Length: 319
Length: 247
Image (cartoon, rainbow over all chains, first blue to last red; front, side):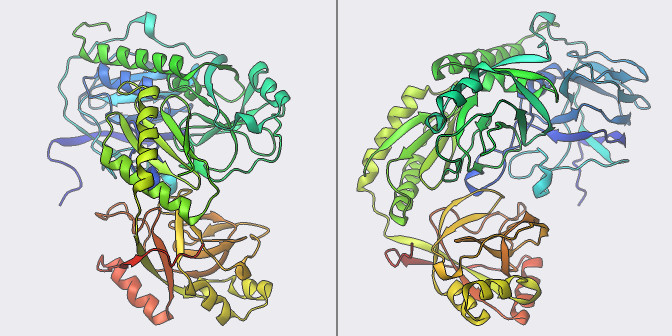
């Protein structure tokens, strides 16, 4: 039996993988109690918009491209979109559009250049990629050999999707990725494990994204955030955006490939509406944390969800 | 029960804290809580993760507010004080101890002042409670190891601990479901695949179950390994009365 479906065809040949190019959807949910890492797109907002622009369900998988992008030879005509970080995408050497769907033809080459803003771009194709669904998700999690691993000359298959191209996201709603962001958080659960001075440093000082940051988590260089009595808690689940502080007082924001459980006190959690901002931070950029309450965080989460729902049902050519 | 408390863990998870010390009894309550939560089938709840002292309930705030969820969770917490699970699933894991499969058995024996044979006997005589799973897919956090066997982690972690390795770290014991870097003292290895995403049941056990290690010979290891490779291996499980719990 062929591993590919009769409705799919060779779409791209990978000529160069780039720094870290993986397939990601909205993640592998429901098995965290068995220790299965969620994974999924670091920036779920950009992923979902990329899908909507090519007429896909929002939770379809796309290529997640990190800082230095891949070179892809196009093997079949398709409609694609590129959203998220501006990594200087090009089609046959000329600047390619972003946040807008467009046609590619067999023989075209898609490449990327200098990262101009943000860290992660999403390349979606109308119809979706034909890669194995493992435990409900197409997401790649390399440490457990789950999903698809890129290598040079790999052929990526895609399903035939026929949609019109030229659908774009309105400039007013395209996110801007800055060198400094305010990131909103909900306090706890272990706020009381930290000294008053530690909590003050956490909220009043700026934190720098360290080069030791990846899909698993962002290490921050911060003024020391001190604990009252030690930094070991009973191992416990850690949701996306958890900010844990090990004994060295340097916080870590846990991201898509975080382990399901952790053992360090958690000072706060990044709100879900701000996860996309964190996902686009590059090493050396800075953030400041703001406390908000859970109701406000949920209002913002719902607002983002409503926006994504509205664009996925829109019939306009600019959404 | 002594009561539970809900705290938000961000805007998409609620942490249910059980106000009790970690114990096999608390673990049973947490398992019962999760079972009730499963039965309730709450709209908007996507999954939950039991741990030593708390359960995290993941949800989509678009479908359910934190207040509504908290009310439901507190309700479940109260009603399950009536719920007593009297049986538990015991999963038997065959282990080849020592030699290449367990390069640190000698060190654990020296450290504990026991013979290698005694270490194997102690390690395989009791049943271990799976308090929770995490760290790697299929990795069980086990309670119940004999204090005599406690051995500090390696000074320098290994770059690769082979899949199936059974190890000791301080007073904990566990099994590596995947090859991974690690600092545990390795005393044996199981041919059983603890995690296989392509199997109908990717996992052999869950939090709240118990594990017993069965010492096996090299020949038996080969035989089981062949069965596992051929997809023919059947793990041994039995339902036992609870109460014979080690801690």
